[in-house]
Image 1 (cartoon, rainbow, N blue to C red):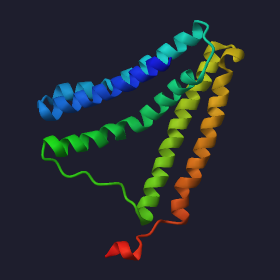
Image 2 (tube, one colour):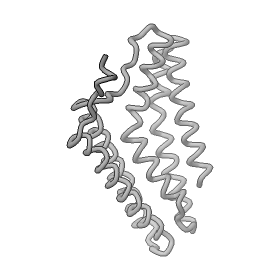
Image 3 (cartoon, rainbow, N blue to C red):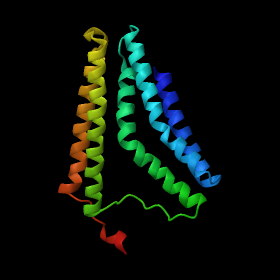
Image 4 (cartoon, one colour):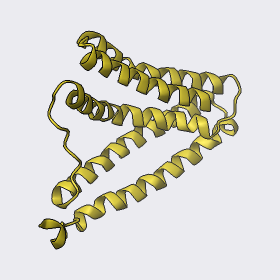
Length: 181
């Protein structure tokens, strides 16, 4: 299962970079768009292999759980990851505008941190939903017990992320006097 996830992650970036190279280096915008739109197919293949592996008698392990996490994160953050890479390719190869850096201070940083947490929460909902669905599909709790643990662990991580992300709302990071000028 680990190899399928690693292959999926590699293929995701192969399709992203291939799509961007086609779009900006070779000026084949249609082909580039097609390759970028193929990235969700990788998620479906990983999910299919995970379910098939479990249905064929495998006991769920950390890698099966990572497949669901990967899919949730990819669905929620995939567009922004591709957008991030797209802006850098456009700047480098197509004389596009220089990409802006993430905000470091004040209310803008706080809003950005909250947005990131809400995206993480959405990824958690999707990934945990997939884990719950696989528990139901397999129908053998002894083989899917690790999924409950994965949901619990991810929930703790999500809670820590909440505390960190929303701390910027309560205590926004300000520019130090010596850094201003």
